[in-house]
Structures are given as C-alpha cells and as structure tokens.
Image (cartoon, rainbow, N blue to C red):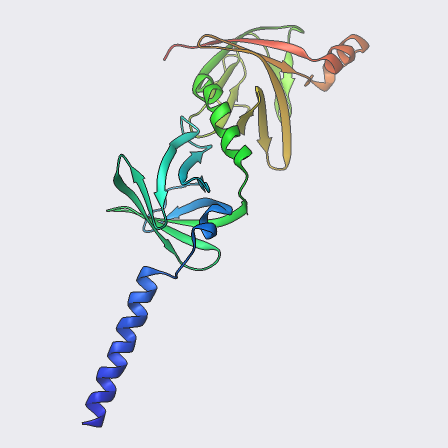
Length: 251
C-alpha cells in the first residue's frame, strides 16, 4: 500500500513540475516593460529571425525587424500582463521562462525571445521614423551618373560607374553589381538612420548620407574613391563628398 501511495505521490509531483514548466514562472508587468526583447528563434524551424519587441509601460506592444520589407511588423498593439491583443483577439500568449527568456505563443508557433537592453522609447521612435525610407529604398536602383565619373565602394567594388546596380533586398542585404556584371562585387548588410544609409561588412561600417530619396530617385553622398584614382582634386572631393545619382528600376 505504501508503495502505491509513494508512486501516486511521485506522479503528482511530476505532473505539477511539468505543468509549472509549461506555464513558466510568475512575472510582473515591469519584468516585460523594463527591457527590450529580441525574438531569435521559432521552435521547430530553421527560419532566420531577429525581431525587436517592446512592451511599453503604457501597455503598447511593438515588433520591429531589420530583415523584412517593412521595419514595422506590429505597432501600438495592446498587451495585458501575459497576453498581446490585436483587435481584441489574442495574438500572443506570453510565458516567462526565467529572468532572461520568454516565449510568445500563437495557435501554431512558439517564438523564443531573449532580454537585451534597458527599455528606451527612442528605439521605438527610431524604427518608426526610418520605416518610410526602408519602404522606399527596397528594390533595384541603377546608377545614372556620379560627380567624379568612376567611383568606388570599399572591399572589391572599384568600378562604380553609370550602369552599376544597387539591389536593396527586403531582408536587409545590399548587393552591388558593377556595370554589365552578372555577379555582385560585394554584399553588405544595410540599415537606415536619420536619412543616412549605413552599410556593414564584418566589422566595417560605412555611412552614406542620403541627399534625396523618393519613389524614383535616390541620391547618395559617398567618400569612397578607388586608390588608383587618387589625385589632389579627388582628395578634395573625397573630403567634401560626391553624389551618386540612381533611378529605380522597374521590376
């Protein structure tokens, strides 16, 4: 009899532990709203994902990504403790795993998110303000002319001239093709902050102020000149910056 009671008692403890594991730990609203969180994986999927999520103290929920057509995925939704609501319906159920990790569950997916930096509303503002430029810059642009003839980009792109192609992928990658080339001369990650295009390759970050950007025209200010073109005149242009004039290619 004692052995049966022991087995039953052990099973009850096991079930309780599993239930707790499934439902996560208790957490306060400040636990979510004091930090920014980054979704880094979807359970059971190899899909690359890196989404920044914010639970504001005023109960608004934001989700952003640098690797989509739009920076903004979800904007100003409502969250109530362990739920994110969209049009009064549950979009995510929130489960806290520990002090550093949470899960966001939908009816068919479970996202894992890790705690990053302290909450800063300026980050939300930055994503929203720059989304306009992200939506405009997506796609292929053809270089019409430059103020110096042949220009260049660091790391293998020395012949940037009329006819070169800048292909801004929706996933946050830029592929640059020299004139008439079928293979890109280099590939960068890109982001847009306050009308400046920032290109990243390994540990190198390059900035290109945007003089003009609309549905049809893109004008970048560059300071990158191929070494073989260095002259005193070119050096002065490099210091001031010279313009690259591009037009949008039709798909």
